Image (cartoon, rainbow, N blue to C red; front, side, top):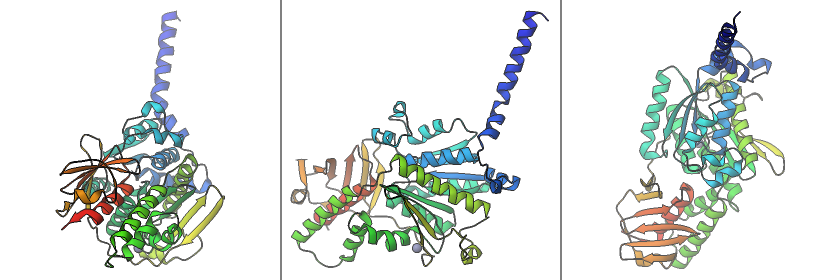
Length: 404
Ligand SMILES: [Zn+2]
């Protein structure tokens, strides 16, 4: 054979093998080796799933990669945020991606897999949840089995997703990486997240967390507090909010993602439908519904807590006090009161460190965060995207400085 022909043949073979690569990859990357998951019907079920990753930070990114490597092919990724320096601590992202949208970064991380991606770059809240629902309904119409994964880092969005799942019957796997604790749970009508947070986490968080404090303050609603007491409560509340800022680290993020993956696989394999009555009535040990699985990476303690007395059947979606959005110029979080209010700018300096003020605007320093308060009830948190903290600060400002 002439040298030229040998080269041609070789080239052809190489080309063919490259062309064949995706399907080879597809097979070899599916690493579900356990016998019970190997059945062809399970593999078919897996390919029929669309995993909706709500929050593409440390937990969401790990989860999506884990699911893709297990054989899930369809994803809907949702996040509003950009990759920041802090995210590098979780050990998952390269510094080359700093400043890119988290959904874009995750798309790159998933590029080794045969994943088909749909992306929503938005801050999911009450005001735009219909856009999210529309995307879900489109996927459902295309025949996908939807599984939602709660991977967000704030309780507000978690509860919104929880309520959407309850209202529309979406499969939802909750996950949270809270400092040393990784936890996951499948949401059902008998065990919803707001009950879990109320009944269990509140008790625990009285000394260390946010929910306990919120609950305490709400309990006092109606009772007229003196200004001095209000001030004390406000300062305490801000300190607590700051201290309890939950952060995922490399350990809790990966364990949370693993717990969520396991719950999902188990539910899919057993054909569990969290919102079908008959599944809830099974009370055997194997039933994973209504159980919160928690692992503490410091103490290495694993615990399972049962929840089955939730009665949130007719959950309604309620708009919060504020319309929350990302400032268009991406200079931070923007909160606007739904009801018209007038903020007493003068009153603010009694409670906050005021950096600058005019009759219409005050610039505050709240625990190192620059907050611009407008008289008409608008607040801008400069280069700050922690919804939880921002809402508490905004509520506190309304509490002390709103004039009706
Ligand atoms: Zn409930």
